[in-house]
Amino acid sequence: MIRFVHTADWQIGKPFGGYADETRAELRAERFNAVRRLAELAQARGAAFVVVAGDAFDGNTVSDRDIQRTLDAMASFAGPWIMLPGNHDPAVSVSVWSRLARFESRARVVVADRPAPIELCEGRAVVLPAPLLRHREGADLTDWFDGAPTPAHTVRVGLAHGAVANRLPASAESGNPIADDRANRAKLDYLALGDWHGFLEIAPRTFYSGTPEADRYPANEPGFVALVEIDGPGAAPRVEKVRTARFDWRAIGLDMHGEIDALDAALASVPSPGEALVDLTLRGTLSLRDRIALDEALASWETRFFDLRVRDDELLDEPDEEDLDRIDAAGFVRTAIDRLRAKAADGTDPERAAAALALRMMFAEHARLGRREG
Image 1 (tube, rainbow, N blue to C red):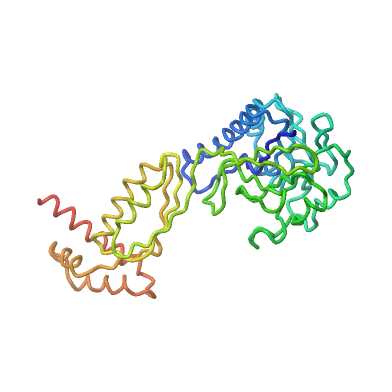
Image 2 (tube, rainbow, N blue to C red):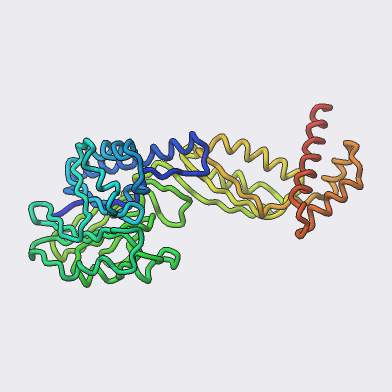
């Protein structure tokens, strides 16, 4: 039996722009921790080797320090790491792969930068790699697998990075194509793929492992590696999906419909909020009273999550008579209030958002004064 780990898309060095400095630093550091976790998994489960199906690095200009930290994180696995250049880190003339030789490493790294068989397990397994030599290829680089000779007793593992034809959303099939029947045509026992960031059995004996640590709000299943066992040539692979992620990235959409009760229920359903990054989209309409209550609730939730970002462009203020009467009680001129209300309700008015904000601030100021007087 041959046992190995299939992983991909580490994207070491990803900058995580758009996040606060402290958040970015922790997200970047977790990429190394994910590699360390999968190395420990491979060692503990007795894997013979690890295949990395491209994009181990976010780019060929990744820093020397990031390369060294990656190699250090890999060191707890004693077996070989078969590392395939992907579209983020292709094997161009000057690349992360051409720089590796000058680094100190206890990890056994085999750079699969040529379309040539890599013999493993004393000849009982062979990896057939399809390295990317540039960011985008129009041809299917796995074609050569079909005619690659291997001994009859050898388990054949294909290793590639790209989009399996006719099996992924159209947006994911813009380059680096892979035939959906490649495993059958090349008599592969397993085809290990990278590029799609979620764990997915895409075709017979053909799997994407996904990234071991999510880096975006996904619609797929990131945060896993594949532990693969194959009894021998022609045997069906047994594939175990093993979670390696720390962070939970999730997108939540809520229709408010005049009340905010759904907010607490939705956010309370997220397990381990301190390890969660939530992208929250709010839609609908709220009175000014409920909008102020919503802002207070969000401020409370923000402290509990690792990161909470709110998209409320589709959430509109809809002041009612009670809102406006409360503002009037503070002595504001009703004519000005009515003009702001009209602007806030006019979807074509360029000052709509500013008018809505002004009304909300007036209401909040009234509420503050009322609490002080009380």
